[in-house]
Image 1 (tube, rainbow, N blue to C red):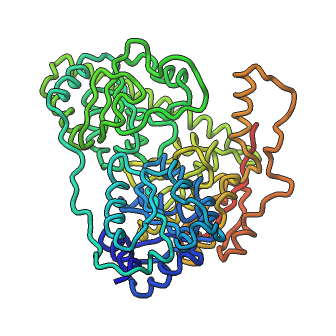
Image 2: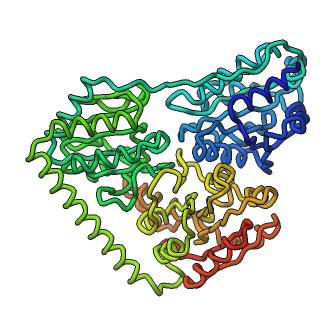
Image 3: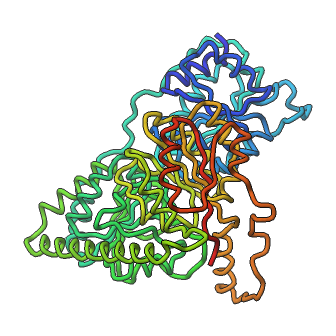
Length: 554
């Protein structure tokens, strides 16, 4: 058989159902093989970044390997921003790019470049298949490496002539791999001892808890010790129910802010994440003085990587969290149980006070024009259909979204990692492909949407019933906030406005852009129109766009 057949059959052997791609000439072996493999659906994107973004979110939503097919050096270059986001999100991806005929390697052919070197900084493994006989081994290793914790993208360069070489080595699967060992019992016992001794424990939860489906075990542990649960500043998943009494908020993006948020905690448990992604420098530790720090991960690579620990545990997250909860329960005295119950009560009261403050803020902003972000989020949350998935890139509306929507379990919410914008619209394609039976609502800022607006065409082309909501404030609002912060931090105060951060001259017409790509839409300026419009959009069973005019920076 030919190496291209081994490639296609390796995808099937590893459970691949979708390829997200933007093909070119060097992808002819793959594209030409597709009719022989009807089990594989090729999702066409108009830009390589869209393909990688969709594949990344597909991997997060399905738990399977996302596959993206790109085109030589310019195509890979177009996709590097999204590939960086997938790398930061630990998405298990197989990204391929066709390479020019290897016999022309020294002739500097059109579109040729060192693809392996281009992809290496943002992947776990980057390699070119040099001979047809290597195809099976390279694919098998690629799938394994992509899923080894912490998961992440791998890249394969596929020369067009190598894809056509004959080989007697058929495709094979990596097999059933059980990667995360049981956590050390002595470590569990010591961690439980420290948790029971803590007077104000706190937990910071990362995305790996959601990916491992350890959210139920985390809830049990938080309740058993009466711990506040905080989220990473940027998160891709709902690893803990957002409206649970113990749930707090996303942490800031600098050490001093994190330390202030965790103020009073005498123990901090980190579970399933890199901890922390900072934007601004601040001296000192992110933890309160004297706080013991525990960490649970599925790989030793992350333990004590950034912070010294009292105890670090490596093990499957659900099993380790459950074992820790059991050890706490076994060692708890009556006073310990009473203290945990008291802390849970205090957290519930704090949660209700914050909810009341949010309701008061909403009431105060109810009739504001242009529409307040908090009102827009309340209207969207109130009209969202049951079992709906939210794919979110709302940026400065994120805090209002978090207070308005209830995300109860992994799979209810997806967002981007790494800070690069444009992930939301592209990601919604992958989420819908992974969860075709569930409604999908994509919420994006207008600046972010313009980075991946071509995703609308893919939604129409493949009949993906996604409702896209574009929050149009006609500015890069987050950059205005960040410029304010920069000026204050570096004593660069200025009377100048915000140069090059407005999107109003000319105004972007998202309804018109959507129509040009086969997606219906409407512009909404009155908040009371949101609910009916959202209901009609979902009822259509087609991709649809709502452009919602909201206030800018006040």
